[in-house]
Image (tube, rainbow, N blue to C red; front, side, top):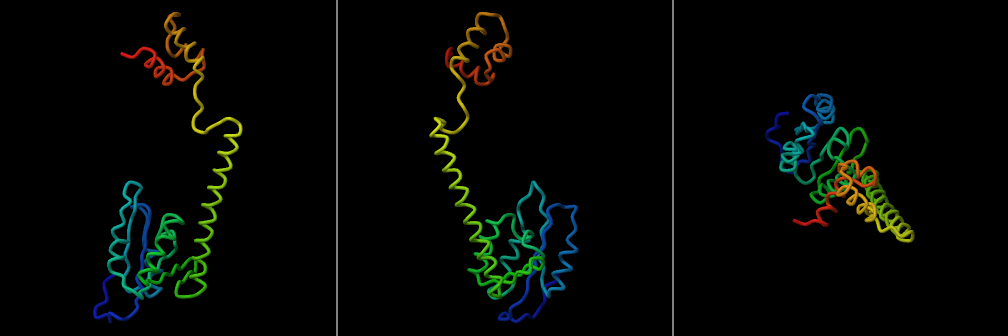
Length: 197
């Protein structure tokens, strides 16, 4: 969308941002909605799995000014995760830039919109703390049962059995590993320690 000329630098304006996640997807529905929402300029990005750069987003951040309003069709167009959303909205707030999401009906110029984002932040923090508590409880439980975490170590007796068979029976490594119940990679690492060059 073309830049409007002669815009008063003190005037608050609406800037749109639209994004799709593959080259084949179409931006039209988003840009149409943003135009209806009175955006005077719209920045766009088409992101593929192999290309995470967002030049349109970077240009928008350079263009937008304090008291302007960033408008998106939905929050997922602007950010990739809840943590990314919270960090982005914090940066926008620090720059005194308002945010409107049309689909979620969020408007940070209102108390309700600001409250909603604050609640999302609190929920995210609670989820992080709950995950940490569950992980801590799991480690304590495992320690109480004699497990220290990580992959279980292969029984040295099994490895020695496999070595003796391998060196004396004429069987292949695959065969002795199957008989002894050990992995080939672990077995060869064990052999290398036993017979360093």
